Image (spheres, rainbow, N blue to C red):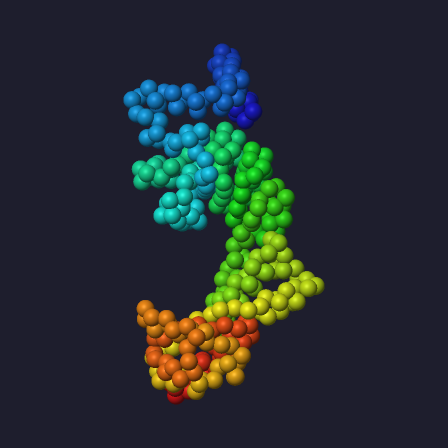
Length: 326
C-alpha cells in the first residue's frame, strides 16, 4: 500500500507519467498478489535449490523434526540462551535452537550448533524444530509481543510440553501463565532472591533453610513478592520451613577455637540443641563420634537438628572462631 502512496506523490511532482506510471502500478499489484504464495512456498523452494547445489541440507539445518524426540527447544541465542545451550551440550541433553538473527545463526552453524533460522511465532518453524515431540521449550527472547505469540502457539501445538519463559517485566507473569507458560522467570525477582540468598549464606543460615525460603518466594509465580504485603499464612509457611529438621556441615577452619578441643568441651548439644552425628577428616568418616574426640582444623562437623538449632550451633562456632582470632 505504501508503494501506491509513493506513486501518487511521484505523479503529482511529474516523476511518473503515462506508461511509466502504469508499469510501476502493475508491478506493485502483481507483487502484492504474489507475496502470500512466495511466503508460503518460498522457503521450501529455496531449500530444494540449496540441495541441488551439491551441499547436504544437514550442513545448514539440524536434523529433521521427525528425527527429534524428548529434546529441548531454545528460542533465542543471546546470553541466556547460549549459556543454557552450553549446559545442555555438556550434559548430553538433545536440543535445537531457533534464532532470528542471520549472522548469529551463521556463526553458530560454523561452530556445529543445531540452529534453525526463523521466527518462533510461525507454526512452520516450531514444527520444524519438533515441537510435537519436544519435552521443554525455553523462551529466552526480549520481544514481549513475540514472546506472547510464541508461548500461545507452542502450547496449542503441544499441550503437554513444559514451557519456561524469561521476562524482564514483572507485570507479564500472570498473562504469560494464562497463555500457557508453566514457569515464568522474572529477572527482577530473581536478582532480589539471589541477593537474599547470598546474605543468608553469609550469616551461616543452613542451606536447607535458604532453599525452603526461596521455594516459597518463587511459588505461585512469585505471589509473595508481587503482593504489597505478605499474604495471610505466608509467615506461618516460613515458620514451618524454619521449624523442619535439617542436616548441615560446618568446616573447622585453621585458628578456630574448636580446633584442638573435644566435642565435650564444645557442648553443642546442650548449648544449641544440635547434634554432631559425624566427623569427616579427609577421606575418613567417623559416625557417632565420642564426646572425647579431639577436633582438628579441616574437620567437617555434620550437624543435625531443627533449622533454629543448627543455626544456633553455627552461631556458637562462629563466636568461638572470633574469640580465637582475637
